[in-house]
Amino acid sequence: MSSQDTLAIEASGLVKAFGDTRAVDGVDLAVPRGAVYGVLGPNGAGKTTTIRMLATLLRPDAGSARVLGRDIVSEADAVRGLVSLTGQLASVDEDLTGRENLILLGRLLGYSRPRSKERAEELLEAFGLADATNRQVKNYSGGMRRRLDLAASIVVTPELMFLDEPTTGLDPRSRNQVWDIIRALVDQGTTVLLCTQYLDEADQLAERIAVIDHGRVIAEGTPGELKASVGQGTLHVRVLDPEQRAEAEQVLARALDAPVHLESDPAALSVPVDDSERASDAVTELFAAGVGVANFSLGLPSLDEVFLALTGHTAEDQTTDDDGTKMEEHAA
Amino acid sequence: MSTTSETRDPVVGEALHAALAAGERPPRPSALSACLTFGWRGMLKIKHVPEQLIDVSLTPVLFLLMFTYLFGGAVAGSTDEYLQYFLPGVLVQSVLFTSVYSGVSLNTDVTKGVVDRFRSLPLWRPAPLVGAVVGDSVRYVIAATVVIVLGLIMGFEAAGGLGGILASVALIVVFSFGLSWVFTVVGLLMRAPNAVMNTGFMALFPLVFLSNIFVEPETLPGWLEWFVGVNPISHLVSASRGFMQGNVDGTDVAIALGTSAALTAVFAPLTVRLYRNRG
Image 1 (spheres, rainbow over the protein chains, first blue to last red):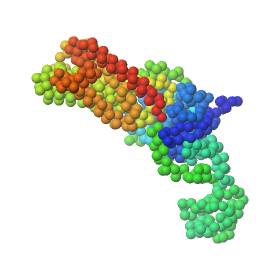
Image 2: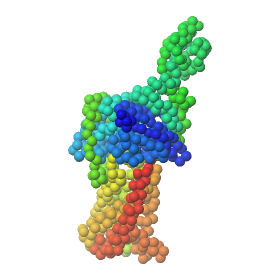
Image 3: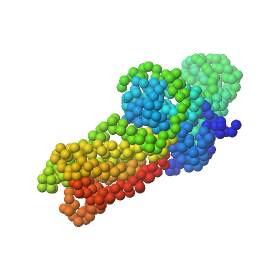
């Protein structure tokens, strides 16, 4: 089987610069079909610019990419026929009603007038917007707007869907609804490229993840692989009495011969471990030293820790630092 | 806001799967059909955002009333005399100002992200632009109708009859179609809808006032009379007057049509180019 049959997206060396900023600086991607592929990175890492190039909205300065076997530059129109994009801004017309928005898109996608109306009703029902059909979108809540936006992206079910931070700014309930929609899409055979800055979102949904920072892919793999690349796991301990944390720190550092991380919770600490047997020995030593332990657990590192290990900074750190870049990306 | 739709479980699993399973892929629409659909969107906008229309209709109404009754006597000897001179001019003025909104609405689409949706569809690419500009013509006709009806009530007499009036409106709409491409370029270059509106109005104001809309050019100093003479808007106004009074000069009509064609030839491709290449 050629890679053309198996890969939904094949990108190599994609570059896009805005002025002096290289927003995307040589991105390679190989996205398999039929699953959620996560692109994870902080604001300003180049996620949006990458997605806009792949969705044919931006021309790359260098590099090339094929989406569903079509070149994004020379066969852009063919690509547009197979993909849809839900961007960071809800790309629906706020002045129109939900129904009018969907009919408009139905007509633009080639449905007859009656079929467009039928399809609009079908989608409004399916996305829980039946009560808001004839209300102007500007009166929708954030979650409703996002659902309409997603409905607008599947008036014709796409083979590949680009989702750019679909849950940013949503409450947890709306976020779960969006996740359900994404899972349903994948069940139906659509490939989803999901850009997100939320580590747990990528962890929840994505089969594979590319971590992007400063316009480059710095790591790629399944969530499990990414976590494993950082270390076997982490021992998390909470002491009964925060006064005893310093003592616990000493015991653990000696037993495991590794740097102990003090959590913001004054009773919690964590240590990377490469061997679960040594971890249990270390806990035993804590008890022996008379430190009261409330609970302990051995877990895979979180994606936060992965990000920290890969980039030397946490994802959140950069959110504030890179605001300037983020603005540029939007303006572009 | 009503919360009815938020309280029940919004995403209905089965309906969702059924909606997603509808795997049909209709043939892509023709360029004409796409343009008409965008024109229909323009009509929906008029329905949902009537404020814009009121805005563009009210200003000419004020102009017509104030200029006629305040300055009419002084400028033309009597308000009635002045109305006969002024009405075709204010008609041109009101429609030309309406064309700025082509740029304003395009800029709104860009800033709100709707343009991204349209650009990611497999469509004839200029369709959203052409459709919107054609749809805006409906606005021009509405603005024109308001002015003409008020003028007739105030005592305007069109020697050219209904045919003359219609021909005059048609010419003005064609001219504005050409002019609106200038504002779509502005709309794609500016950062916010308000900036587009201000720039558009600032550019139009001198062009509209330094024409023969308000006064006979013969009363002006020579250099200004010269400028008014070469201003295409003056020719549009003269042609419009000619149609309404039944004594149109073909040269004026030709200059007006030629200007519209030239503006379209330069600014329509430029608009499409900017639209296509924007990030």
